[in-house]
Length: 120
Length: 485
Image (cartoon, rainbow over all chains, first blue to last red; front, side, top):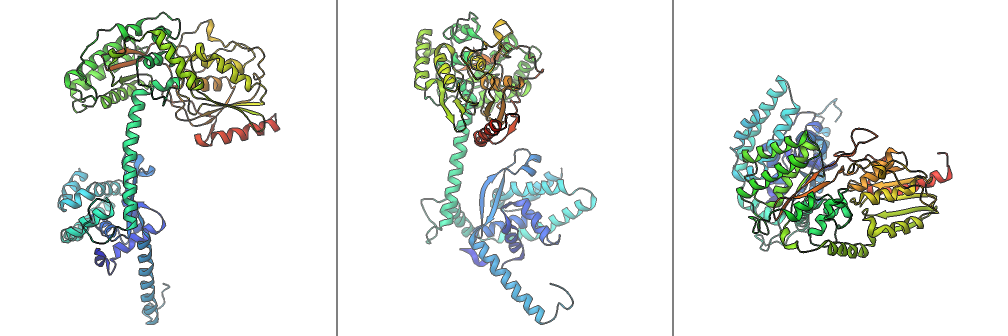
């Protein structure tokens, strides 16, 4: 399996995993969720988003759910149907280990006092 | 404009990516474009997109093709051959299963909905699922079931003398070898002929004189414009025309029906045979009285799945009401009731009043017979609380029962808004396979200008139809213990 491509985990991919940690979402909702959880710093364009989704799917970290209607957006778009994605257990595991890795990094950063005066 | 431009840019991606995600990407763009209005947000949007293109296009081209194809094979479609040597993961099988179930579900749903589209009225006599072939018998039933036009029922099920539908069913010139074969692919000539005939019938018979020419013209226009050119499937064609007629009229009894079996083959059956078959069917189905029982708290419960012909099933109706006679409240379960004979609807309602009550029937002109034959001797239910369980499948005659009792404030409706089908279409034969149902009567409604046509009857208590019985039982009990409530 081409898992190697996701090591180290690109930040877009990690953000998508985090976005899906709460609930299953479709593409646009993932993009909004990522925007929200990064305070607007990361806005995934369609190309990056679906490219990352494809990689995550191939690695078995997320899976596609049955296509279903979503009232809020689809009321606007007529009878559009969307693909929803959700974390697999492998994806959840990887997100946890990635978070732990970052937490370790953060501990080092704290120890080195490069974050002086900031609450992180 | 912007969307087209973006769609153009999407062509820069590899074909595989476009195939997999092109549509989704376009939709995402559309969503953002709609959400982010104003000069700056739009500017930012295009800036984002340019960055996005620069980053992701090279990446997609660099993406190794084979693992992806392999991943697709194993992760989405469990096939008979495996590219990889690893065994399929459980999740792959699971997702494959989900996709399969989903696909089968879609096909099934499509079949069901088509079956309903062409058979909606067939079911109105509670004949659903009886496995009978749609024959002249059922077509005749349609008319009498859904109502009203006694004569339309080929004289078999009532004593009416209106022969218009009769003529159409049996007397119309037969196109012995109609263009449509079994399994039905349609050609231009056939479509043209059906549309022309439908327009003529509409103009001649449709009760709504203002709408009739509008609908007829609209159908002809669609035909001329070539809107039907790609619709070669007979069932799909009938469905499309039906939708178009209903769009203009909001009249659910207006329908173009397609029957696989040519009518001609079934002509020999006599009214007596029709009746005999109907009797047998009703006997098998206990006249569609599915359940009659007394629930805890002495609440009577009657589940009835059609309003069958009085001439055949009156005995059953009387027996059912007798069983419930000593109940303190009555629940009529009409959630699976697809309608039936207006006479039976009125007969059942008679038990709920102690004096003759005007009974609105949109399928008949008002006469002295439009009052219920109340009181019914020996009946104790005239002053008992009544609850009616409804669903979105509650149809036609069953909706009349709901509507009238609601308007008379005689029942509490619990469940979902009903289907919205009211006055019945009289069946007119077009050829061996096509027929059109056209309502020909409209009675005066004492309650308001609009009855439930096209909108359904709103329940008093809105709950999911599956929860309706529980809710009704609770309400009935609450009322028993606090009669004033």
